[in-house]
Length: 263
Image (cartoon, rainbow, N blue to C red; front, side):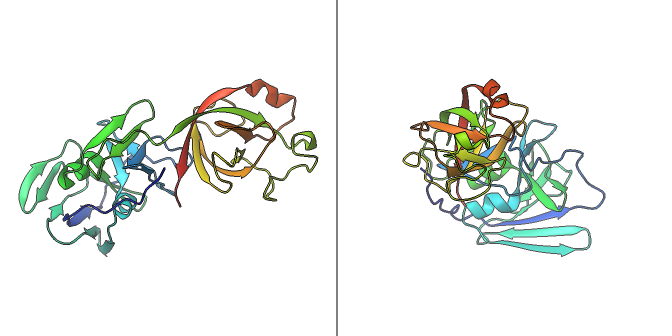
């Protein structure tokens, strides 16, 4: 389903961010992808710093991960309290200052709806400003807090599928008599899921959300398809949860959203 996403054509950005004395009170969550970004059919993976909605309800994204997914080289230069980021091939020059709504595009002033931010060593830029500058249509899927960049100009549906999910424990009766190990020989842990390999290949990295259970990370989690099960067929996933077989019965059968993450 995922496709290689070609870089934006003809946009070069020289981005200067003044970081002195400015740290946003907002922090991006590493374990939970509260806001997600998709380019064409490909969900962007943010390994640590995550996108977030700022006080103006605008999506702020870590600049490097978005631009690299669009095929750009990113050059950083830090001079005192300033961080300069250069992207692309010098067709345009865009200058922003953190905490300020005024920016320059080819030395012409423009006003942003919300300012860029610098926090925890990361530069965050309003996603809509980045897409508008590059001329890329963007759509918002409110049900999943998912921003979709149509780099190819085509309409793209949200890149997830709805699965039925159940839960299983380390009880040997649920693991072919082998105890606390998955099909690939790894010890069972939070993030292990059993799948139908004909639907999701073994080893696939996933992001799942929509479940409700106190024994799992709140909101969503990154998971790995490393296990199988005789009853796991089609669009069904079995989620490993530490605890007894009896305690996990309360999980029941739940509908979840499953995203496939590219490495």
